[in-house]
Image (cartoon, rainbow, N blue to C red; front, side):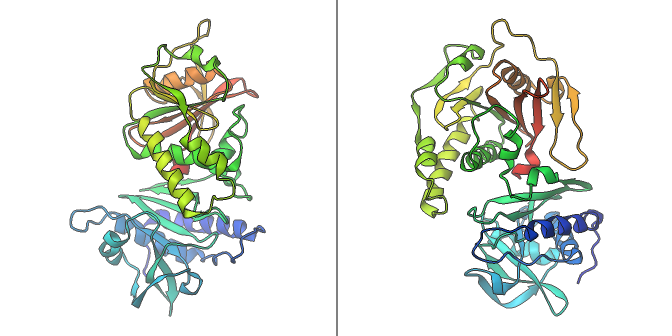
Amino acid sequence: MMVPAYPAARQVAAQVHGRLARHVAVPHSAEEPPAPVPDSQTIEAVIDAAFWASLRREEDHIPKISLALLPVEQAVHPLLLERALPLNPNMLARLAPAVERPGIHLGVWAAAGQLMLWGTARILPAHCLVVEVVAPGLLVVKYPRSGDGGKFVNIAVLEADQIKIIGEEVLGLADAPPLLSLLSDCESSVSSAGSVDVLTQLATSMRAHGRGGSLLVVPAGTEQWRESIVLPIPYAVSPSYSELAELVRDGQGDRHHLRWQEAVNRAVSGLGGLTAVDGATIITDQFELLAFGATIARRDGGVPVERVALTEPIEGGVSAIVHPGQIGGTRHLSAAQFSQDQKDCVALVASQDGRFTLFSWSPCDGIVQARRVETLLL
């Protein structure tokens, strides 16, 4: 194997190995056996190669690569190279243009004591370790949950010398969807696993357009949230637009069907795009679109929000009581105010720099919780 030279790779490898081994050890309902857990040395070498490849350029393009640590025997319908190629940054940068589309993974496994690239795979077994190059110096270490149609759980995010390990309580040994864990202590009725998966997709779509945006999730069948919105709303929708709501409601038994997932992706992309318009997009907790471009205002009789509890779901992260203006600009301040005035609602805010914050009222602590969750969405 190549000798790793990226210090963070060595620092994180043992933690990733231990975390994945614990998750694989938990009984699951997948029909296929989970992928084997690579040892720490292998994880270190793959992260190291991916990091240095992320700093290369191939015809002036930034490499975007997803590496799946998987023996070829366990891959489903793989594309096999006639001769396996050695894993190194140069080879990864050269292959990147062929595999940069979402859902394509370069297969990596050891042969004769050397890590080799054996081809590509689109379908991965449960708990297959994946190292993804997101941007120069930015890597995500993750794995697909069993029985979830390719949805991933992040274990760690590495950005240059910064290492963020997702907290064990967030991942959970039951493979809970990320936003489900984050919403579990608030009053929102967005509670089913399928619904929160869609909310996670919406959050990811909001980050993707890079313009920043706000999404308010309000209880269906209520009007109290209007007390915190400047009326009239310039882009109110009547009747409410229910394409995504109908897909979520009617697709309970079709979640693993490609056609259903493609329809959901299109609907999510459409809603996510609306958040790029100045102002807040408003949907119900059943995913019915009510308005976009809305302006948030303090409710009559409400007090200005002065304090929020800021947390990040990573190991070693601590809660800090801060003024919402310390988190971001107008979007963040108005979202915190909305969450304080409308305690049964949730506000999601994407920044132009990729940060993502989820605001909700904590009935236990009596304060607005501001959770930085971009590490779960990469």
